Image (tube, rainbow, N blue to C red; front, side, top):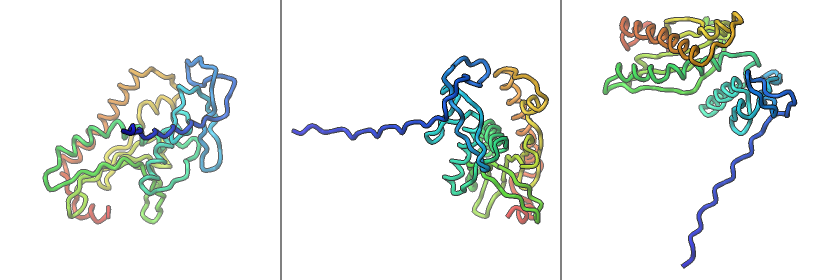
Length: 240
Protein backbone atom coordinates (compact mmCIF):
# COMPACT_ATOMS: atom_id res chain seq x y z
CA UNK A 1 0.00 0.00 0.00
CA UNK A 2 1.37 3.38 -0.92
CA UNK A 3 2.26 5.59 2.01
CA UNK A 4 0.03 8.61 2.30
CA UNK A 5 2.05 11.78 2.03
CA UNK A 6 1.26 14.69 4.27
CA UNK A 7 0.71 18.04 2.52
CA UNK A 8 3.68 20.31 2.87
CA UNK A 9 3.28 23.28 5.16
CA UNK A 10 4.08 26.45 3.22
CA UNK A 11 7.23 28.14 4.44
CA UNK A 12 6.70 31.27 6.48
CA UNK A 13 7.44 34.48 4.64
CA UNK A 14 10.70 36.05 5.83
CA UNK A 15 10.33 39.15 7.96
CA UNK A 16 11.56 42.37 6.41
CA UNK A 17 13.54 44.58 8.78
CA UNK A 18 14.74 48.12 8.29
CA UNK A 19 18.34 49.21 7.92
CA UNK A 20 20.57 47.89 10.74
CA UNK A 21 21.88 50.59 13.06
CA UNK A 22 25.00 50.44 15.18
CA UNK A 23 23.85 52.55 18.12
CA UNK A 24 21.70 49.91 19.80
CA UNK A 25 18.02 49.80 20.71
CA UNK A 26 16.21 53.08 21.50
CA UNK A 27 13.89 51.36 24.01
CA UNK A 28 14.55 52.65 27.54
CA UNK A 29 16.68 50.20 29.50
CA UNK A 30 17.36 47.85 26.58
CA UNK A 31 21.02 46.88 26.10
CA UNK A 32 20.64 44.96 22.81
CA UNK A 33 23.19 46.24 20.33
CA UNK A 34 21.60 44.66 17.25
CA UNK A 35 18.87 47.07 16.18
CA UNK A 36 16.93 48.06 13.08
CA UNK A 37 15.13 51.14 11.87
CA UNK A 38 11.31 51.10 11.93
CA UNK A 39 9.87 50.63 8.43
CA UNK A 40 6.97 53.06 8.83
CA UNK A 41 6.68 55.69 6.09
CA UNK A 42 3.85 58.22 6.27
CA UNK A 43 1.67 59.68 3.53
CA UNK A 44 4.26 62.43 2.93
CA UNK A 45 7.05 59.84 2.46
CA UNK A 46 8.64 60.73 5.81
CA UNK A 47 10.31 57.74 7.48
CA UNK A 48 10.22 56.88 11.17
CA UNK A 49 13.62 57.36 12.82
CA UNK A 50 13.00 54.95 15.72
CA UNK A 51 15.57 52.17 16.06
CA UNK A 52 14.88 49.01 18.04
CA UNK A 53 15.97 45.41 18.50
CA UNK A 54 13.78 42.53 17.34
CA UNK A 55 12.31 42.22 20.84
CA UNK A 56 11.01 45.79 20.72
CA UNK A 57 9.78 45.75 17.12
CA UNK A 58 6.44 44.30 16.03
CA UNK A 59 5.83 42.54 12.74
CA UNK A 60 2.73 43.44 10.73
CA UNK A 61 2.20 41.64 7.42
CA UNK A 62 5.83 40.59 7.29
CA UNK A 63 7.35 44.02 8.02
CA UNK A 64 8.87 45.22 11.29
CA UNK A 65 7.73 48.46 12.94
CA UNK A 66 8.20 50.26 16.23
CA UNK A 67 5.38 49.52 18.66
CA UNK A 68 3.47 52.76 18.04
CA UNK A 69 3.55 52.55 14.27
CA UNK A 70 2.82 48.81 14.34
CA UNK A 71 -0.46 49.71 16.02
CA UNK A 72 -1.23 52.20 13.24
CA UNK A 73 -0.37 49.63 10.56
CA UNK A 74 -2.74 47.13 12.20
CA UNK A 75 -5.48 49.77 12.01
CA UNK A 76 -4.75 50.36 8.31
CA UNK A 77 -4.66 46.62 7.52
CA UNK A 78 -8.02 46.04 9.21
CA UNK A 79 -9.53 49.08 7.47
CA UNK A 80 -8.32 47.74 4.13
CA UNK A 81 -9.88 44.36 4.86
CA UNK A 82 -13.14 46.22 5.54
CA UNK A 83 -12.93 48.05 2.22
CA UNK A 84 -11.41 51.39 3.27
CA UNK A 85 -7.97 52.00 1.78
CA UNK A 86 -6.23 54.72 3.80
CA UNK A 87 -2.87 56.43 3.47
CA UNK A 88 -0.54 56.11 6.48
CA UNK A 89 -1.08 59.09 8.82
CA UNK A 90 1.64 61.67 9.38
CA UNK A 91 4.58 60.42 11.42
CA UNK A 92 3.53 62.15 14.66
CA UNK A 93 -0.22 61.65 14.20
CA UNK A 94 -1.30 59.50 17.17
CA UNK A 95 -5.08 59.70 16.62
CA UNK A 96 -5.58 56.22 15.17
CA UNK A 97 -3.28 54.53 17.69
CA UNK A 98 -5.00 56.31 20.60
CA UNK A 99 -8.43 55.14 19.43
CA UNK A 100 -7.05 51.63 19.09
CA UNK A 101 -5.50 51.60 22.58
CA UNK A 102 -8.56 52.95 24.40
CA UNK A 103 -11.05 50.86 22.40
CA UNK A 104 -9.15 47.71 23.33
CA UNK A 105 -9.65 48.61 27.00
CA UNK A 106 -13.34 49.37 26.42
CA UNK A 107 -14.32 46.52 24.13
CA UNK A 108 -15.18 43.87 26.72
CA UNK A 109 -17.12 46.09 29.17
CA UNK A 110 -19.03 47.80 26.33
CA UNK A 111 -20.02 44.42 24.87
CA UNK A 112 -21.12 43.25 28.33
CA UNK A 113 -23.40 46.29 28.55
CA UNK A 114 -24.82 45.77 25.07
CA UNK A 115 -25.68 42.17 25.98
CA UNK A 116 -27.40 43.41 29.14
CA UNK A 117 -29.33 46.10 27.27
CA UNK A 118 -30.37 43.85 24.37
CA UNK A 119 -33.29 41.44 23.97
CA UNK A 120 -34.39 38.75 21.50
CA UNK A 121 -35.38 41.39 18.94
CA UNK A 122 -32.02 43.15 18.84
CA UNK A 123 -28.56 42.32 17.54
CA UNK A 124 -25.16 43.53 18.66
CA UNK A 125 -22.81 45.18 16.17
CA UNK A 126 -19.15 44.91 17.16
CA UNK A 127 -17.13 46.48 14.36
CA UNK A 128 -13.40 46.07 15.13
CA UNK A 129 -12.32 48.37 12.29
CA UNK A 130 -11.15 51.88 13.15
CA UNK A 131 -12.34 54.09 10.32
CA UNK A 132 -11.43 57.58 9.24
CA UNK A 133 -14.13 60.16 8.48
CA UNK A 134 -12.97 63.13 6.45
CA UNK A 135 -13.93 66.65 7.54
CA UNK A 136 -17.40 67.82 6.49
CA UNK A 137 -17.57 71.58 6.97
CA UNK A 138 -21.16 71.78 5.76
CA UNK A 139 -22.37 69.56 8.60
CA UNK A 140 -19.67 70.73 11.07
CA UNK A 141 -18.13 67.26 11.32
CA UNK A 142 -14.37 67.29 12.03
CA UNK A 143 -12.02 64.73 10.55
CA UNK A 144 -11.69 61.86 13.01
CA UNK A 145 -10.76 58.23 13.60
CA UNK A 146 -13.53 56.17 15.22
CA UNK A 147 -14.37 52.72 16.58
CA UNK A 148 -18.08 51.82 16.83
CA UNK A 149 -20.32 49.44 18.78
CA UNK A 150 -24.11 49.33 18.36
CA UNK A 151 -27.43 47.73 19.15
CA UNK A 152 -29.72 47.29 16.17
CA UNK A 153 -33.23 46.11 15.39
CA UNK A 154 -34.86 45.46 12.01
CA UNK A 155 -35.95 49.08 11.92
CA UNK A 156 -32.40 50.40 12.38
CA UNK A 157 -29.96 51.37 15.10
CA UNK A 158 -31.24 51.61 18.66
CA UNK A 159 -27.96 52.65 20.24
CA UNK A 160 -24.68 53.68 18.63
CA UNK A 161 -21.57 53.99 20.81
CA UNK A 162 -18.59 55.69 19.21
CA UNK A 163 -15.05 56.24 20.43
CA UNK A 164 -13.20 58.84 18.41
CA UNK A 165 -10.17 61.10 18.29
CA UNK A 166 -10.41 64.21 16.11
CA UNK A 167 -7.66 65.65 13.93
CA UNK A 168 -7.88 69.03 15.66
CA UNK A 169 -7.71 67.49 19.17
CA UNK A 170 -5.26 64.58 18.85
CA UNK A 171 -4.84 64.10 22.61
CA UNK A 172 -8.57 64.08 23.43
CA UNK A 173 -10.73 60.95 23.45
CA UNK A 174 -14.42 61.56 22.68
CA UNK A 175 -17.13 59.06 23.61
CA UNK A 176 -20.45 59.43 21.81
CA UNK A 177 -23.90 57.98 22.31
CA UNK A 178 -25.88 58.44 19.10
CA UNK A 179 -24.88 61.93 17.97
CA UNK A 180 -24.37 63.18 21.52
CA UNK A 181 -20.88 63.77 22.89
CA UNK A 182 -20.94 62.09 26.30
CA UNK A 183 -17.44 62.92 27.45
CA UNK A 184 -14.27 64.41 25.97
CA UNK A 185 -11.12 63.88 28.02
CA UNK A 186 -7.37 63.56 27.72
CA UNK A 187 -6.16 60.20 29.08
CA UNK A 188 -3.88 60.60 32.13
CA UNK A 189 -0.92 58.87 30.46
CA UNK A 190 -1.18 61.37 27.60
CA UNK A 191 -1.38 64.24 30.11
CA UNK A 192 1.88 63.03 31.64
CA UNK A 193 3.57 62.91 28.26
CA UNK A 194 2.37 66.43 27.41
CA UNK A 195 3.83 67.72 30.67
CA UNK A 196 7.12 65.88 30.19
CA UNK A 197 6.61 63.60 33.19
CA UNK A 198 8.67 60.44 33.33
CA UNK A 199 7.28 56.98 32.70
CA UNK A 200 5.88 55.64 36.00
CA UNK A 201 5.93 51.90 35.29
CA UNK A 202 3.42 49.39 34.01
CA UNK A 203 1.49 49.09 37.29
CA UNK A 204 0.86 52.84 37.52
CA UNK A 205 -0.19 52.99 33.87
CA UNK A 206 -2.60 50.09 34.43
CA UNK A 207 -4.25 52.01 37.28
CA UNK A 208 -4.52 55.08 35.05
CA UNK A 209 -6.06 53.10 32.20
CA UNK A 210 -8.63 51.45 34.47
CA UNK A 211 -9.61 54.83 35.96
CA UNK A 212 -10.01 56.35 32.49
CA UNK A 213 -12.02 53.32 31.36
CA UNK A 214 -14.40 53.81 34.29
CA UNK A 215 -14.79 57.50 33.48
CA UNK A 216 -15.97 56.64 29.96
CA UNK A 217 -18.20 53.77 31.05
CA UNK A 218 -19.91 55.87 33.73
CA UNK A 219 -20.77 58.46 31.07
CA UNK A 220 -22.21 55.74 28.83
CA UNK A 221 -24.22 54.23 31.70
CA UNK A 222 -25.66 57.64 32.62
CA UNK A 223 -26.68 58.27 29.00
CA UNK A 224 -28.49 54.94 28.65
CA UNK A 225 -30.14 55.35 32.04
CA UNK A 226 -31.50 58.74 30.93
CA UNK A 227 -32.45 57.99 27.29
CA UNK A 228 -32.67 54.21 27.03
CA UNK A 229 -31.53 52.40 23.90
CA UNK A 230 -34.01 53.87 21.39
CA UNK A 231 -33.12 57.05 19.56
CA UNK A 232 -35.56 59.91 19.79
CA UNK A 233 -36.85 60.68 16.28
CA UNK A 234 -34.73 63.80 15.98
CA UNK A 235 -31.55 61.87 16.73
CA UNK A 236 -32.51 59.07 14.34
CA UNK A 237 -32.91 61.58 11.52
CA UNK A 238 -29.64 63.32 12.38
CA UNK A 239 -27.64 60.08 12.43
CA UNK A 240 -29.02 58.62 9.18
